Image (cartoon, rainbow over all chains, first blue to last red; front, side, top):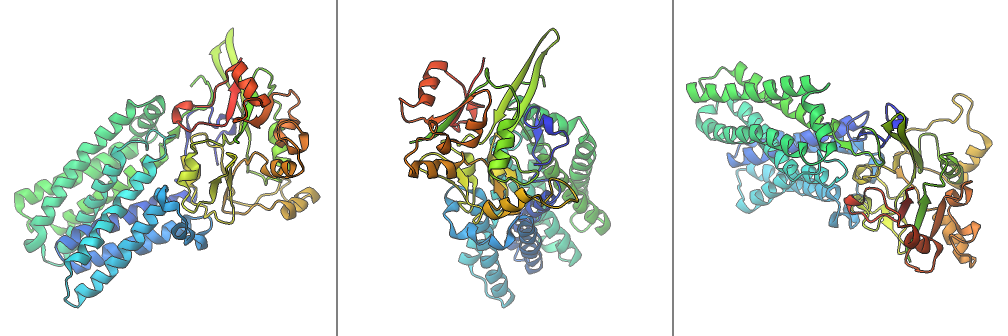
Length: 297
Length: 215
């Protein structure tokens, strides 16, 4: 494990680095694209939007799955995660199963839908695995009890809300771009409103709950909101990721789904996605382990 | 049977010989550490205390890393030793995240102990005898090769040097004890009853097999 000061390793609050620094950046992006893609497929399937579903499937399979594989030290051995009994206890193994089942069922559904065939059973199964794909990353991190910032039941919920919200936003962008905003736009907008409110409420609840769990939790939260990462949190996560999307929601409420300029809508969607990505970065970057031995920190 | 270790911090002088011996015994490449010595201070002058903790894998009874491993590369043997089968490891590093003690190392890049001068004869020998695979995670295995080989020869781990982990026999202060925690008559069990040691961060619920006697 890399560290700035080797003599401080596990003597002071030690940040995790393997899942965010150097090659770990790939994992951060992989989780984002996997959850965004699966969330997008889930939302778009509710409106039978083939384009948005296909884009979601692509994001999940190619960017999410590809980056996940590239992150592994031995990517050609990934199949071992499926043939071992690891799924009984390991969230990474379970996650691979969820992603593979989602991608296979989703692809079959997309092909059939392209030919005008709609199977309720198939889409229900694909969506169930899409949902599990969105949530498994949260459970994988929640399992790590050495990092209080991750070891909270709110993290899987946050993953679901942000994954579906991001998915709904991109779906809205595709729908608006294709000129179909007047038909399905209001319904997608409803989803965006609910998920955005959920995201905005969850972030402070999540940070406050972690803040009071332990001293390591306090250190993590402090480093997010008031230390060197404060700019990223307040400007990118809060202003860009929350306030701009709220402005877009208020705009559509006032002017209707077609009344908002496409440029502003796309800017708000992009800002929301960047805010979500930044929040995920902070959760990975600011996760710290407690010192193992008595220390003056 | 459950192998365990007791480290008497009153005796430990913080000389790092356990760390160095471990590196030598397992031909560990640069950057890969199976054992460490953590040193901290509490209080302020004139009432300051220095804490020296040699740490290694705790071979937990409820090992988080074993459950986290998606390929079952990390396994727990019947005798309690937790080890990594490098041939099965995919390098996802989930075990490394899951270990609250951070005693695992990911072998990310090949380095030389003497940069620019190539490998020493000892390193070349190590690559043949004890190869370490790039892109995998490794950790202390309680010198299971020594333990297994010794037991085959009828020796008793913790008593006979040839069957005892290298860090235990190399400790110049005799601060380390190794033995069967399930055997009430083993030296390590007797000392645990007498000294009432503690384990690192018991609140994690991992039930470590490494105990510390704090002065």
